[in-house]
Amino acid sequence: MARLTAGIATSHVPLIGVAIDQGKTEEDYFKPIFAGYEWTKEWIRKPENKPDVVILVYNDHASAFDMNLIPTFAIGCAEEFEPADEGWGPRPVPVVKNDADFAWHIAQSLIIDEFDMTIINKMDVDHGLTVPLSAMFGQPDAWPVKVVPIAVNVVTYPVPSGERCWKLGEAIARAVADYPEDLNVQIWGTGGMSHQLQGPRAGLINQEWDQKFLDDLTADPQRLRSIEAIEYLRETGSEGIEMVMWLIMRGALQGDVRELHRHYHVPASNTALGHIVLENA
Amino acid sequence: MHRSVSDYMSEFDDIPGTRVYTTRRARQGYWLNQFCMSLMKPENRERWRADEAAYLADWKLTDAQKEAVLARDYNRLLDLGGNIYYLAKLFSTDGQSFVQAVSTMTGMSVEDYKAMMMAGGRSPDGVRSIREGT
Ligand SMILES: [Fe+2]
Image (cartoon, rainbow over all chains, first blue to last red; front, side, top):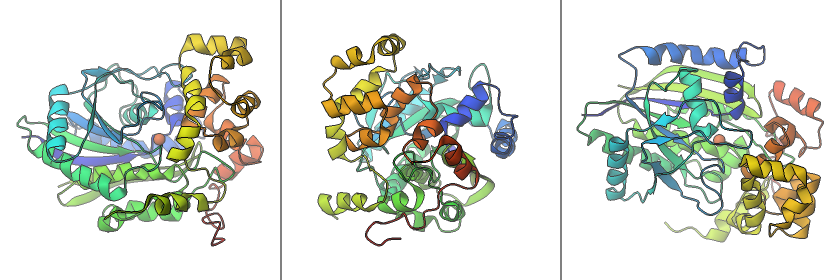
């Protein structure tokens, strides 16, 4: 039976990808950013921890989806996904391989479970999906895990609530438990933490709020479910809303959840970078 | 539990210095944002760079949107229905980073903006709510 063993959250700041692609990770600006991923890189390499498949929750930043198509929740079911050209050419990273049998299983399970997913075949994946892979695995010739992409609309309002995201996570956990193959599965929630990329208020960072959010992923996860969109916007900037995607990850962890590792650093570009590893014991 | 759309959405207008990308803005900015998307193709970027005004002539942007695009006035583009992830295709084509482009919306120089970020970013104090002044 497939087992959901851990949840990982991380920001997916494009600049992290640029630094890796251009060999800048040892520069003073980037050193503290990448230092916080060293623990996870070690941990995830160990055979007992290495997932076979990652269910990777992210948002498309006007790359695969434009104004013609705005799915609230979408699942990638193709065999593979190419890195997107976001305006400066595609990132020089491996093609992302799916476990398509598993992805189609999850899609069916979620729809039966009353989550009306949009099923996507042809889809290029942008920094939201590839930067977390680079942060965790560096620059391999091929990604060492299969990836099931789950894309969430956090761009055009209204976006799904934290509560709805949490429940989607719970439904994903049921889908995993219902899969007969023996797989080690991780779920990753990406994006955030506080940041605002637009208007005169751009550059907003709220470290206190972010740290409390990180604390409560284990201390008081029920509080996080009910945070409204307006609070994310006021307290963590217009793009801080991406943190609802962390709640899909957290909602999927049903066991005794233990924090294994945490990393928080300001700034990465315009963003407060957050990263946490949660064990689903 | 049903919530009123207007109650839910109107809250978003109460955040200082912020244009939340609501469905209203998405409708207003449809062609503007679709134009930006076209710059994801290398051959289009080339044609754009060669003659921006001629390139824009093929798109159903309003005159105000066209002017703001040519002026790279990003705050104005937000007001006219642009979304930052779409506008990113425009400033990426210009070779600008997010920090460079975003800083132009704050009234600060890029250097001052970078220094603010290095010092921990902009505090939310005083810019949470127009109504409450918090
Ligand atoms: Fe993002």
